[in-house]
Length: 273
Image 1 (tube, rainbow, N blue to C red):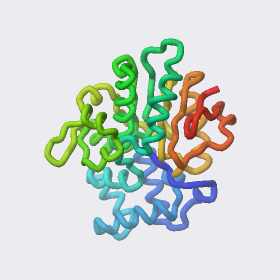
Image 2 (cartoon, rainbow, N blue to C red):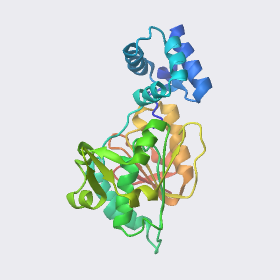
Image 3 (cartoon, rainbow, N blue to C red):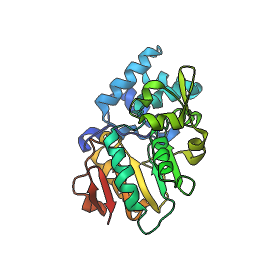
């Protein structure tokens, strides 16, 4: 999940710490991840803790270690992103999606939907979407994409095994239908796994598919700078078909959505005009 920490242009000034600014340049040149758009105080504190944990006294040494150790690089990605770890997070919003938004998107007899979980983390969000689509009987006729920047998170998503705590908001009947206990873990049903197309994607730099009926990007945008956030809303809107819906998180209300060609259709749901 490529999550940019920041709330404004003042957050993206060049660091006056040459060790950290060198790290920013190295990460950008080797991975395409632009840490200059991250809120420096917060991100530097996170990464200093991680660096010290592994015994490195400088960011230069830490970067060299990351190049040699794939697991350390994945841990770095994990630290700079916020991986949502619950199915049906904020259940009432998912109920609105299930009971109101999906039926509206299917108006006119539309059988399948094209849906994108734009920052899918370890898979809880796209699997929740898959459960809802299956409940409407349209999972097999729908295209469900799920993307994230973190390869480690994507690997966990594809594996589809979760701790019980991740299921705490899943309706009991739904949990019984789609999960099987295996020791301390719960395995998601293979039907859902087959339905989700997981792939790596950088929200800031990569092109998006178009023609989506529904794009879900929740609990991600609050960490972006205002400039990056605005650019992404434009990209999301361009990727929606007319009448398509963008579903954002419970702390991510879009102010002046009309500037992106969107209008509110329910709380935290925005329709392309």
